Length: 266
Ligand SMILES: Nc1ncnc2c1ncn2[C@@H]1O[C@H](COP(=O)(O)OP(=O)(O)OP(=O)(O)O)[C@@H](O)[C@H]1O
Ligand SMILES: [Mg+2]
Image (cartoon, rainbow, N blue to C red; front, side, top):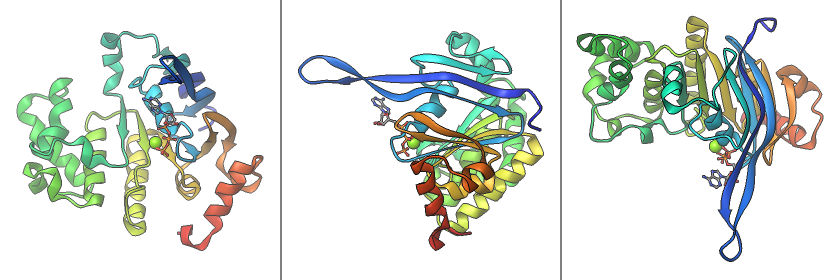
């Protein structure tokens, strides 16, 4: 698969946040520092790093939910960072995100089914009368039931909420999904179920994934290639087996050692 055209190419991507400095002066904080990587179609790239290293900011810039200060994001060869919001709309349904806490992205006062189905109406993917049927198929595919359609988010467990988040991300049949710590809030056994579900869905739908995590064990389980972020810089990037067997930086070595501790195995 590595010979195929990359679906996503990120080049010299940078984010400088304006922060309040001493006195009235605003200064710049570089959260993402000229990083480059690419993801081949159907593959999973892992972005690993400690808290605050710039993982979420990178994921959000790739989806153009956050404006890049500099650099390029190409999707199927098309530059996204310079598109108007109107032109970006064409890509929105093809690029989705799953968060650590999917529950918080649902409105507590509306049924989960209506919210999962909303993009089908918004992008006019199916006629209104077919929305419920489509949502129910998706609910069943992620291990939930049609009866869950009319329930509200507080009626679901943490694992079920992640399943709902996945259903919502996949309802528009996207090509590319950012998974931002998708299992970090779950028990280990539930983590494994969700990861296996994601792997199955990826195989069925040919999904290309960007997996954001601080846990190298997840990367080992899910990814072909990965990069290590440290204070906004991509200090190492390559095939996962190489990162694991021959880490070139202290920060990667630390992550590898953490995986080898018994509590992280399995
Ligand atoms: N809107 C913002 N304004 C200013 N600084 C920000 C903003 N968003 C993020 N940052 C800073 O940028 C850095 C990177 O944040 P980011 O959320 O990308 O980290 P992360 O790797 O996802 O961390 P975590 O593992 O805790 O989720 C952090 O130092 C953070 O405080
Ligand atoms: Mg984050």
